[in-house]
Each structure stands twice: as structure tokens, then as C-alpha cells.
Image (cartoon, rainbow, N blue to C red; front, side):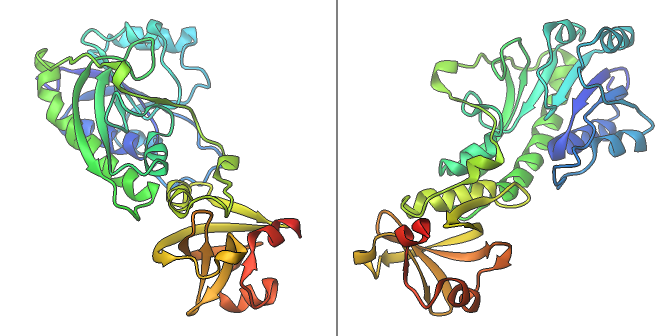
Length: 316
């Protein structure tokens, strides 16, 4: 029965590669995969959808616009039972969605209706959430709004980075897909309406959104660092004419030791510590000042023996 099911798959990123592999392993016939050309300006941390598809003998195309007549005609000729979108980066128009006889479905990296839109994992970590998930749902003209088939929760630890969570979400996405596949093929899978009023929508993020200030609360800085840590573009702050990139932080107990200075940087017990705007403390466990690792010797060479008030650094 699965072998008689034809699917066209739009996919990219780690969720795309893993879900595509799961469909191949399940015996689903996939004559066509649509993906993206890799961006040379982006650090690709995830598996290649194109390589997975070609390894299975599948035709792969990478149109800039999937809604052109030639692509629509090719999909229509295949008469797919399902169309799947696994982290494909463009919205699919109704002219494509309507070509699947038993529905077009999307895998989203959140617990819909929460965190609809772009970069849901990064936003969830940034906002200090304790969980997110993977949701399989039917696609409609409105993004991330169609009825839900199934979802699975994924925990977010207080020090997890977005890449930690992304890999767990990819695991959950495969589990949801395989759990849902028999019901989809039999035509009796759930289609649970989403109450969008209970959810939230977030837009895309850019590298400049990784900038922070030392006068922010420590928790806010910590969450931003976790949300954009490499392989994502990373968090940074400006110290006069220099750029301090911060890739890892650790929240420390206790209050600021130099409250008279306000937000400041200090070397203490062999580590670089930020005393933040709310009077709490944050260890910069991995940071780079103008691309040189900011360990205590480099701190003293570049900034002095400290502590160094943030206001003096920004005025430099």
C-alpha cells in the first residue's frame, strides 16, 4: 500500500534530509524532490537534501521559484497522492497545494499554533522557552495555519543552544512523520483545527539581530547567545571600535561585585565575567575580541586589568 503512494517532496535543512530519508525507508515512491541550491554565504551544518534524493535515484530540481508553469506541470503529470514540505524555505501557492489528491502537508519546528513563521527554534530559545516540538499539519494559503495531524514535544534545557534543540526537533519530526504515515495513506489521519488566537507568529532573523548590550539583564543576553550560537551567525556587542563575539555563556549565582560601575567586564578566577544591567552575572565561556579568543591574558592586554565599565568601553 505504501509503495502505491506517490509523493512529491519540497525539502531543505536537517529536518528535510531526515524526513526525506524516512519516506524512502518506508517505501514511499518519490519521483521528484524540489530543494534549494546551497547558499555559499551560509555555513551549512545540515545534511544535503539533494544528496539524499540523488542517492535514492530520485530526480532533483532547484528552481528559484517553485510556482513557475514548468514545475507545476511536472508535478501535475506525476499525480501525487501527497505533497510534503520539510523545511523548504518558500511558501507553496494553492496552485501547487491542490495537486495532491490526499493533501499537502508541512513539518514545522514548533508546537503549533505557537511560533508560527520563520526560525521557530531560534525564537523559542531566545524567549527562554522550556520546550518546543515538531508539528505535521496540512498546508493552506496562510502559513502554518492548516489543521494538525500530529506533534511531538521536545525539551529545551536552560543552557541548550539552538543547534542542540534543532537536532532534537529533527528526531521528533521523523517520529511524527512515521507515526502519521499509516493514517495518512489510509485516509483516516486526524485533521485538528489550529486555534491561531492561542498562538504566535514570528518573522525571520538576520545576523544584525544578534547584537546585544551589556546593560541588558543577564538572562536576556544568555538566551540570545544560545539562540544564535554557531553554526548560526552568533551574538556580539560593540566595545568602542571593537566587536566582542560571544558564543557561549554561563549564568552565575549571586549579585554584581562592582555595582558602583554599573554593567562591566571583569576577570575573576581565571574567567571573563560580565556584570549585567540587572545586577546579575554571566560568565563568557567562549568569546572573541576582534576574532582573538578573549581569555584573561588577552582581556588584560586589550582592556587592562579591569574591571572595565561598559559605559567606558562604548565611549572609547
